[in-house]
Amino acid sequence: MQVHVAFTPDGAGAAPTGVVIDVIRATTTTCQALASGYERVFCTTEVEEARALREELGEGVLGGERNAVRIPGFHLGNSPREYLEPAGKTLILSTTNGTRAVVSAAQRCERVLIASLLNLAAVVEATYVAEEDVIVVCAGVQGTLALDDAYVAGRIVELLGWERTDAAEAAARLTSTWSGAEEAFRASKSGRNLLENAPELEEDIAFCARESVLDVVPRLVALRDGAAEIAL
Ligand code: MLT
Image 1 (cartoon, rainbow, N blue to C red):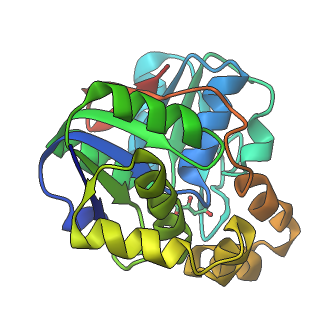
Image 2 (image 1 turned 45 degrees about the vertical axis):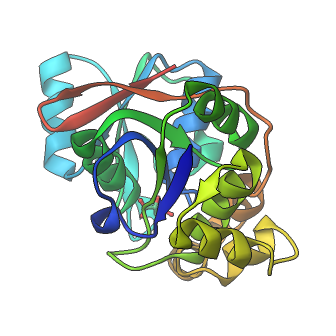
């Protein structure tokens, strides 16, 4: 089996399985929300799409960010620490890069799994037993490589132990240059954006840097009106 890494969503071709990462913070938030008891998370691209979906469903907690802070009129932001208790059954999430990456992978891959460091071991195990070539899709930041997502991609490549494309090899080598996740996250564009725009959320970095503390594997269930429905 082979593992490939796309450092940006546009660099991802079609593959049987896509594993999507936006570790700071959209996929971490998605994993945490489902582990805490939300039944489903809709990943949406545009703010108006999220609002329209809530109208259509007749329920749902609106969560997400622009420039790292809560979207006006939304119930919650994109801090995973806001999702330690469910505030409803359905979360409708819209973020700058991460939810777009999930929707993009849903359009290209037969199977989509959601990865973060929090559920690293669980997602690697699910990928391993599926025995299908996999592409790890990094959300990046506005179409460019982000070191935080590349770090997690490298951890997945290391743990899978499969044949690596050159991009997968690059991710694994990059990961080994850091002393740990938090150092990589603080150095990344995503981490710096968070600290510049919402310094009060600095603790999110350490929260997102914890490895294999949640035993969940969020998966794509369906695409609905352009939103990716994710559940366990
Ligand atoms: C994103 O989707 O770009 C991120 O999740 C941004 C963030 O909330 O830190």
